[in-house]
Structure formats: C-alpha cells, structure tokens
Picture 1 (tube, protein in one colour):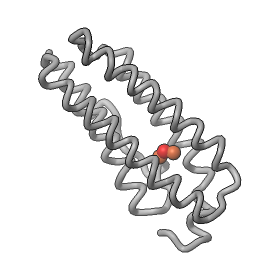
Picture 2: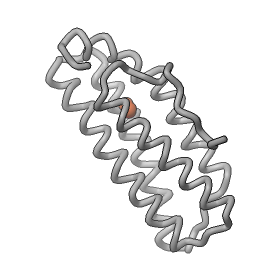
Picture 3: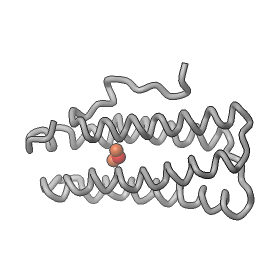
Length: 135
Ligand code: FEO
C-alpha cells in the first residue's frame, strides 16, 4: 500500500488539475519510498527539486484559471500556495547546504498539507471552474 493514496474525493472535476494532483501524490510516495530504502541525498535531492518545480507549475495552472474566471477567493488561495512554496524552498535550501536527508516528519507535513489543501481549499474553486467550462 502506498504511503499516500489518491481518493476520488480529491477530484476537483477538472482532468488537467486532477492529473497534476495525482503526480504530486506520486512524488510524495517516491520520496517516502526513497526514505524507506535508506537512499541518500543523491536520490532524494532530485525528487525534492522536481517536486518544488512541479508544485510551482501546478499552482501557476490553478492561478491562471482563477484570474481568468475572476475567482472570488483568489488572494487567500494564492497565499496558501506562496506559503507552501516558501516551506518547500526552505527544505530545498537545507538539502543543498547541509546534505540534508528527508525525515518522516517532513514527508508527513507534505502529505498533510496536500491532503488539506486539495480536500478543502482546492475544492472551493471546483464549482467556479466547472461553471466556466473546465472538465
Ligand atoms: Fe492544487 Fe491550490 O493547489
């Protein structure tokens, strides 16, 4: 069983975004597996770098639609994205400078954040996006 399982309740009803969320879940699982396998920094670092870049790209996708559809909660949603990216960049900086090895508490943070953000904050734009023709 994977560390983090995709559930239908995560779906926002937009294929492009669901696909991106699934990829983020896969990345967390890959990072978790690397930890279980006691893989070193040379394995973990590219996964972390890839995840940070993918999250940035994913947030840009959502924000593009929020702006296009004049989504009412755009500012507060974007604020959550900015905070996550800051945390991810901090993680990456430590990794770059100290040969940091990812711990289970950090992976749990990533999992909990993604769970809460997709299940609560992202669900709030689902109707707006769908009403504007995304599916
Ligand atoms: Fe799917 Fe708002 O991040």
